[in-house]
Image (cartoon, rainbow, N blue to C red; front, side, top):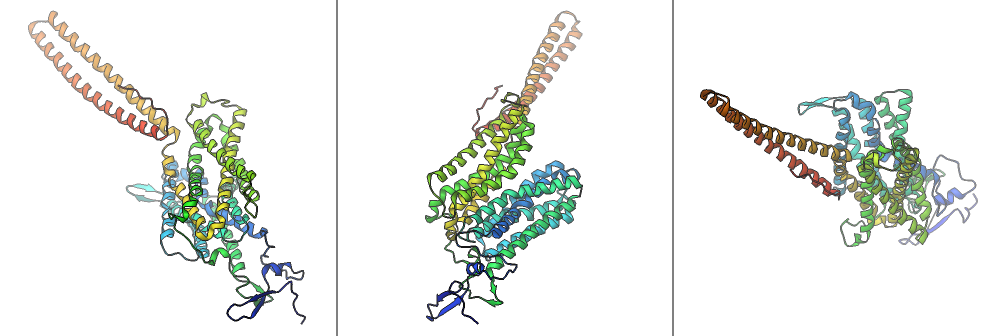
Length: 532
């Protein structure tokens, strides 16, 4: 047997024994012209990313939030037949917030290996969809009312898995290899999760299958993603060449899974230098998961066709923006003025988009420029697409900047900040423009009712005075006494009743007005109150 060539053999020295160990690395094996064509991933050359691994990370990213997106995408089919009707969306929002107990428990309890945590997240995500497939229409009486406990229990399990994904997927991708494209591929997959569920809904509407089949399809997608993850992980975990095991020192498990980390706590002096990106990630998550979904439908009232058009365009633009961040930074994390300008410009653009969205939400639709016109629809679509794409770019670029510090647990801390930004989205759910408008209408109605009672009070006073004057001239003594008594009784009864009612209505009006002012102050809006 001829001796192996120097190009295919790796010479290493064992410090303990002083002997040399021989073994082929994956990169050297893949470079051999006679390498066996087996069904395995091939380690790319140094400084390059594996296309197959990138595709798998995209699938893993899709599985991160596809379950939660699938639940909201299917409301059109399940809400009309469930007890909560369209209030089911509010219940789902609460359930998703309860799901944040999973990241909290994971942060403070003993942790399994990272790949085990990822496998648990993926399997529980798939199980939640298959569970919904079987019990989504199950109802039961809770607190005296019928509720769809089957769907809500499935949503709780799905939300716990999705919330936990932020804490395990990013560190795994960050430690997978030196190339930044793996993180960008994960971000791309997360951007595609809503598009994936929307695509299944489109097929459902075209074919006409039931929600049971819909949830089964989503569950199968997650299972496919789980299988892809196992293939990716165990390829790096176990490598066999010519049916003989290599030395573990040459190729071991994925660097992200079994690496010895020097993880630091989130609130330490060493972590202080990351405070700016952590705050940026938290604010970005709040904008992406709370402000934009809540206010964008109201912003589109003057441009009805713009909302759907913008969402469809964003399905394609978000993944492109995520991969664009990896291309801009490159394998060596470029830090020149062009890249810095792109990062700063993207942050400015999506924050400007937030301001424009809020303005369009609160301004009367008839007063907005180009309302109801095709030019206005184009303007709204461009603003929305630029805002959504720059959010995806900033998220991917920020996580890529933090990747070199993954051994310190920085990516996990960024995931915590990301999840914290999602937690506070319930505050935004209470501030949609229509809710404040309805509150203002109720206050105006109470004000009008108060004025009506004031008029009745004045009318009652005039009426009793008329009775008193009439009794002085037109009636006999007995009639005068009776009419005077009737007039006095009428005046006292009316005055007392109307005064009580006026006082009660005034208190209600003032309480409503005070609550309304507090909500306006919270948004920094001008306060205009009518005094009674």
